[in-house]
Length: 303
Image 1 (cartoon, helix red, strand yellow):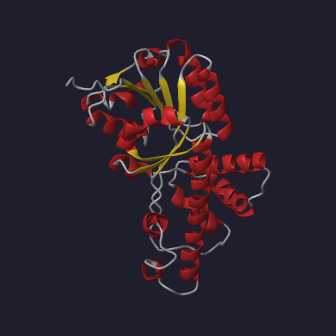
Image 2 (image 1 turned 135 degrees about the vertical axis):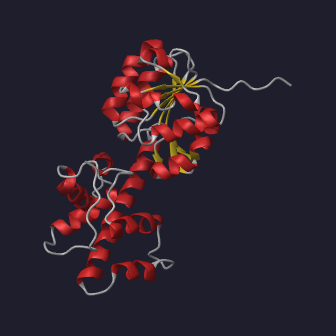
Image 3 (image 1 turned 60 degrees about the vertical axis):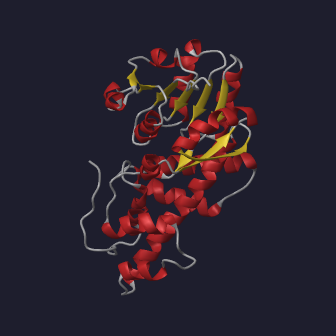
């Protein structure tokens, strides 16, 4: 029996998340061409076996699968438009960036015009999940396109088809709504514990295992106690996602009052600490409670 030939993948966007995701594909044996606007970031994958493309056109020209992991919908649009003339007919573009639902639908329609398939597949799980291959992957697209994308997505995490093109982004926004709200609630709980005279470290330990338990309490609750705001997910990304939640809510004709408040909290620290980890939600809560602070450690913040 002939050995199966693995699809050639162009991976566009070698950042905090893109690098470990592309690395897992290389470790699985896929031929990967890496491209990043800052070429030195793509070069970091050369030792892992990636081919490094200096130009976007060179990256996608021979790829059956193109994966984008970029900053936002505007950047994805620029990259897609620039790549259009070089994409192979029948290629599949998998956008794993976080964009608006409407943007994903537009990308799908534009690519469909030239015979290229599209799946939007944003992720949750952060850098740790990307490194471990345990990302939650929310996919939007046709059943046939998902079947084609699924073996590749499974190398990076747990993919679930949630609907037609654009639905993956909607699911990601629902995820970010829960994440953003929970971050703020945990920050408020730890600040209340401290201000009321309890040990916030002990309070977190006491409530773990009960109904308040969550991955966010486990990971980001500890980050808040340590005042470790070095980035995994960033304040600027969380703010962007929450703003996109509100746009999607408006389009759907619903109002999300708690999300509106959480979005304002993140906006209040966006200018000062845009690259800080999203657990810096604690700073937003402390900002409106002058003189109150969780723990005694100095803040660890990116420059």
